[in-house]
Structures are given as C-alpha cells and as structure tokens.
Image (tube, rainbow, N blue to C red; front, side, top):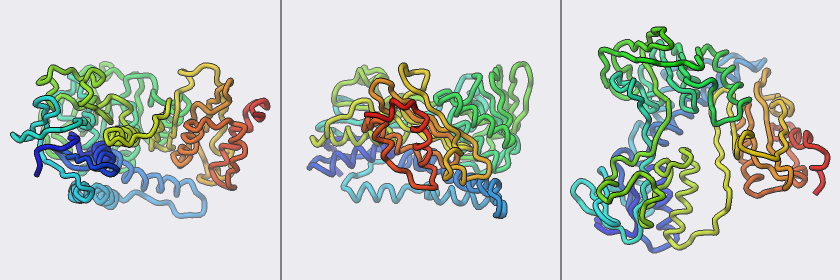
Length: 451
C-alpha cells in the first residue's frame, strides 16, 4: 500500500466518501480514506439510518390508528429493533469498505494525526498528500459538566437501544431529543423531556415547534419547558455497552425537585470533532477558516449545518474542485432539513424572523384534498415566504404527515429563483399533498399572479 496519495481524507463517513469519490472519478488523482471507527460513519450506524429505521414503523402505526376502516397496528419492539439492526448491517462495515475498494480508494484503519505539511501519521505510519488533506471527522456530542460522572446515554445509545428503560429522561429540545422521544415512547418508555428554553426546536418556525410539542404531549411524553437542571447523580454508573442501561437509577434535580429515572439521554448539541487530529502540532486552531489552503474541513467538522445531505453537497464540490472539474458555484444555496417527528417538519430557507420584506402565506396542511386523505385527523400547516420585490420563494415550511416528501419542490423553487407567477403553472396532481402548493399560491395577493 502506497504512503503517498494526491488527497488524504480523514474520516470515511458519507462526507469523506463523497470527497474521495469526486476526487478520483473524473481524474487520474488518487485518494485514501482513514477511519478509526466504522467506514460509513455516524450516519450509517448511529444517526440517520437507524433513527429512520425506528421512526418509519412508528409513523405507520400512528397512521393506522387514525384511519377509519383498518385495524390498528402496534409496534412490536423486538421486531422493530431487528429492523434497525439490519439497516445498520449489524454494525459491520464490510460493504462500505468493499464500495471504497471498488472505486479504487483504499481504507486505512487507525487514528489519524497531522504530523507536518500535507502529512498524516496513522499508528506509526506516515502518509503524505501531494495536494490536500481533507478533514471529514464529523462531530461529537456535548456533555455538560454536571453530567460528566453519570455515564449518560448519547444519541448512539438512543438509536442503538437494546434495553428499553422504563423511565427515560431526555435533556434537550432539539431534533435529536424530539425524534428520540418519539421512538422511545413508542417502544414503551415513560419519557420526560427536560428543556432549558421556553420552546422546542428553536431552529424551526414557532408554529412548527408548537405542533410537535402538542403531539409529543398527546402521545404521553412529559415535556417540561424552562426546566433548570441543577444536579444529576448516579452512584453506580457503568458503561454496560451500546444501548444498554448504564447502571442504576439516575436522580436529577430540576428546579429543586428531585426526579428519578432508569436512564438519561443527553441531546444538548454537538461540536466539530477536531481535538484528536493533531492541530496543535502545526500550531493551528480549531477554526478551519484560519487553516492553510492544503488543509480543508467539510461536513460537521467544518462547523456548517450538521446534516448529512449538506455535508455531502459540500464534499462533492470540494472533491470536484480538487480534481479540477468543479462547476461554477451557485450563490445562496439554502439548507433543507426534515425533522422526522409526529408530524414531520420540512423546512428550507431562512426563518421568518430573519427576513424582511417578505409576504407570508400559510394554510392548513389538510386544505389540500390529497393531504387531508393521509389521516382522518391531520395536524399541521404549510407556509411560504415570498420576496415582495423579486416575487420568488425565499423559504418554505411544511408540517404534517409525510411533509418531507414536499420539501424538494420548495428547494428547487428557491435555488432556481422561479417567480411565483410561473410556479402557478406547475400543475399539481389531484388528489395529492402537492396541491398544497396551489393552496399557498392562491393565498398570495393578486399582484403576485402577474409577471
């Protein structure tokens, strides 16, 4: 195996894989992936894939309960966890390594540390890069000091759940917390969410967050907003393995009230995983903007939106640029995101609070016949933010069953800067949820119907 490549990629998750693929597929350049854990990364084994493998059956069960004419479905815990295990390949990355080998990119196992300009050391072996070193190491969960000694669950334990705790505390109110609360409640846990702020999902529109809050509470989740956790104790904490209860009971003091749980899940944020790659050896900080040109961060490691699809988009651009095949960059590309709660939230573009001079149109999610047919009782709304001057869509939010499937049309409309009077000629099929676009466009003032 060579000790010199054109590009070294530290991290063999989806983002690192995309960099290596785009570097090599349209050029004669070589690339190597270095991975200290499982090739395929957080998304494949501990985040996107297992969480959605757990959530989709829960969604189907909820659909059946709210549809007249069919028998109610129920979650079969053992079978659901088997489905999760199949989707994570039983934590075996052989197929990911085979894929990399198939495109001519070797995977080197071990912890990578920078040892000089364009040089990386892996377990005593020095590998050099002729062009660049790309850091795609992902992110790591934040563990506040008050939880340092209780061996709390992280997001990996939640997606890798083996022992379903009878009483589960979830600290946090973001995407991970809300999604985990959804599947853990369905698996049978009594879930209490301890949220420091006065709302959930602060990176979403308030009406979307409020819909999810109501739904969680209706499902039996005890959501406590403005909860001030002052201490957390667990005398016999023990790392018993992925997804297993880590010791005895956990006592959490919340606003002078002591609460006892069988397990506690921390979901209070993540930070770029940069502390292990040896930046100090080159007198570099953890700010990628201050790094030399040959050292590039991408994905969660860059500090940008911690979303797999966004990291892969950036990775494709970096890989193509390093290969000399880059296309012109597109300005102001919006970041789309789907939150797979009950109901789903699908959002792209800035929030209303961050925009001036926009027309706000909002309609009930069930105002389209196709959307109303999805459930007998449909929760949620759809919203567009339309620029008053240019008359193009700046942002969109859909909250409702299957809302994520509506999002890409909004992303295309924003990226393509399609005027709303033109969008009126994109005829939605009847009866589908896409008719929401027609309902929204009809809510705009009449002047928006002219070019």
